[in-house]
Length: 359
Image (cartoon, rainbow, N blue to C red; front, side):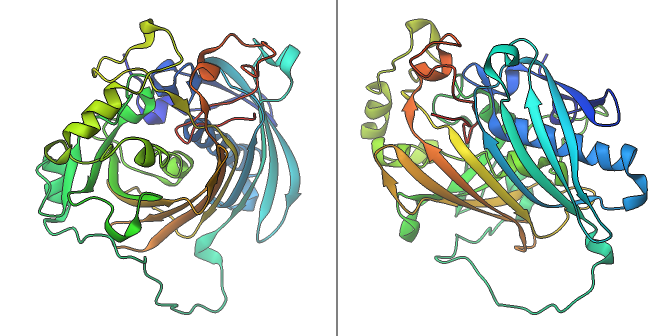
């Protein structure tokens, strides 16, 4: 059974400053827990820490997050240790360290970072409209969100049921994806626009929604920008996919074994895209949650397997929800699946979709 997002990211308090989590294989990239999934779990642990250990602070909103992914994480139990770096009336900052008993004794810390919280509802100060808008503008959503929920789409947006290599990138199956019918347009190959939602259900049997604690996953779940250069129309809707695209996917030979061939008839992924560093700034709270979010991801320079990503998240009202920046590498997918502890670097990448790690 596939756990929903809420249960998969749920931490348990062990003491005033330690929390446990359990990473599930259904939310992985290859053999490694998706980096945004790990990020969301850390966010939830810090939020629980504020609520249980520092209830008088009343700072429920994540303002910023800075994580370094040092080594590959693994499925199974994890330990999150929190240090109170600074607690204050306006903001509080916490240092989080993630370890896993099965591997950290010989490998050290896996993920480290700082999270800063505040209370958006009690802040005061000047506010001005900058008239910011995305450039180039994305295609308009003509049919409303009903057309997304129904799967029909509209003249501008179409659903892509599965992303390429989805059995290797299992975490991508936990979302519904809509992309522009006419491709990336002026955005070019270095970027991508999407509307997406969780396709999991909560414990009450209703579709899960994006919440504040989901944002670490949101900003790390997107089409792989490098593949837009390698495979023509790789993220085009099915009716738009060309024969050359299908041929390119079929010829994308993997460094992994034949046992990793994907069930969606595309071969195992050739590349893994570990993120060394993830920064997130939250601009507004999602309140009780929203079903659909818009995301634009864009790379400015791709060089020698090293590249940047800028991520902008908008809500259903086209208001900026969050901004994120990643420092990424592109490496062989075999490094994701290799035995841990090998000197070839197989032990030194933590994974995400945004696929986190250190090279």
